[in-house]
Image (cartoon, rainbow, N blue to C red; front, top):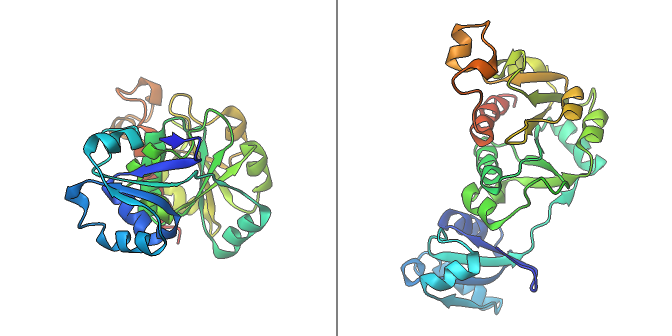
Length: 262
């Protein structure tokens, strides 16, 4: 939940707040927790006291009001609004120099999916994530942090105005790989597609997939084949019992393959 008046964002969930306390404790403005969680955050409370920032023992209902969810798990940390940094040519140049791949999210609209993708990216060591400034794209929210289970502290989220322009600029510099249920190449071939170059992997909107203009600016379109598709090569994806995985589930498989690139 965002507090627009104070320009704050509530971070809740035990794993999310523990990771925040470990990696960026200085970013916590205020801390609230139940008596059951007091011992867990003892060291953080000492740090909060040193910098004269408030921390309070509260009831479950108070945490629900602060976070806007019943899934707060007994702790809420208030931080400044989290805004993605603009993606610059110098940042991209560093990726290319260090052979770092990146994940491009084409209008992922669900904050829970966004958080789950971030969790998988952090797990597999893919730390660069790009989103668009489109209103369709989910922003970084309380739910994003909670579902990411601490993963938000181990990735960097950047924003671009035009994904098509970014993909055009990356031609020949990074291997541009889109995901599409009608793709011709299995995700298992991702490594062979890259040929020692970093990958820019595009995941599409939950309902519509990647947009046509984005698709046209990809070097390859990969698919996660179902067991049914593997057995019956002539069957189209849309004719299988389940056409595709949820985007967050698909991201886990794709990011596992991308982690092998290093």
